Image (cartoon, rainbow over all chains, first blue to last red; front, side):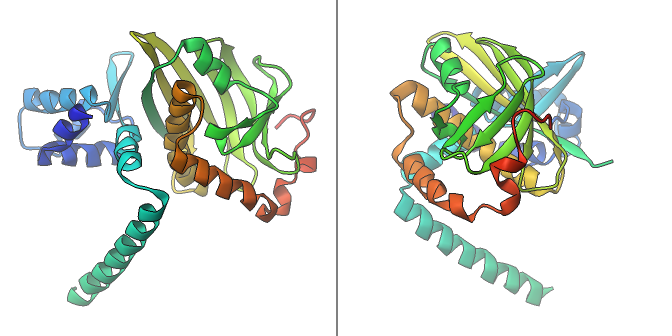
Length: 108
Length: 174
């Protein structure tokens, strides 16, 4: 689990996960488009994410395909929630999302 | 043509590869990692028909055809929810022996984008990988998942009529 928290402890890597989750099977070059840093830096971050199993990297021919893997995050969730807390935490979050999206709409 | 996508779930399972394979391909018995469904096939071989039915056999949630079965490494079949009109996707389980256990990967391919199937596959993939892990390692699903399975099992009677098993016999190819 240390590897997962280490990987998630960086804003760039979290953003990288967003990008990969939205584009299953994307290439390293696809990810790089969203970042203003060197390819070596991108690969370094990707290695940390892969080591934590948050990103699955698959070689297809000469291309590398990247996928987001939700299992490590599910395991964190399973460890610290119970059926009871899960229910109420999710209700509280639903309320937050509803009110905040309303607020955003009225701001716009 | 519908746009399609791919989803991958991977987990390390601390168990012998045979145990993982047997848990995955067990027939005629409720599979906790598959929402308590019972798998029925016309044989574990390419071209065979596959159904995921409720334990009482009345409802069929998933229908498909086996594409590949290479024990204990690879199992692949087409997959369609009987409750939706979406085209079938392909589910592939890949087992790889690594130090101390098995690296288990679930790949769902040709998932139609923006459909109910896509949403269900994303949640299902993580659930299956997660429960299979605790099942192979400890012999049973975790407490939270057992509760969830109990809830799902009482949901059976609420399945739509189109999911009734008489509409999905094994001897008729899907």
